[in-house]
Length: 121
Image (tube, rainbow, N blue to C red):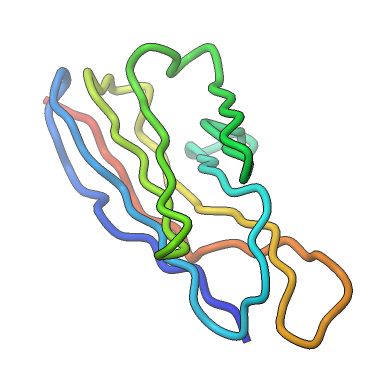
């Protein structure tokens, strides 16, 4: 009923930039918090950047000052501008959203399929 589709990953060299997009679609009544998470090989999934409908934004310390999350509520889309990428940013990046579906009363969490970001010289 709900899909989150990420795009924009790829292979870049250290110091370069990438922009990720995540679009939510389906029987959506309301979208609450949205965010980006990442999981590197052998590590747990971690929060990268989150945003609320009111515009409150939080970043992990490791990306603060280099990454920027933005949201287009009219398009049910969030973006992650990643600048000055470093090899330690290499991971699968996942989009997450808390969504209330049409006809539903509960708010549930949904994940995208993930997009690979590789930073290597």
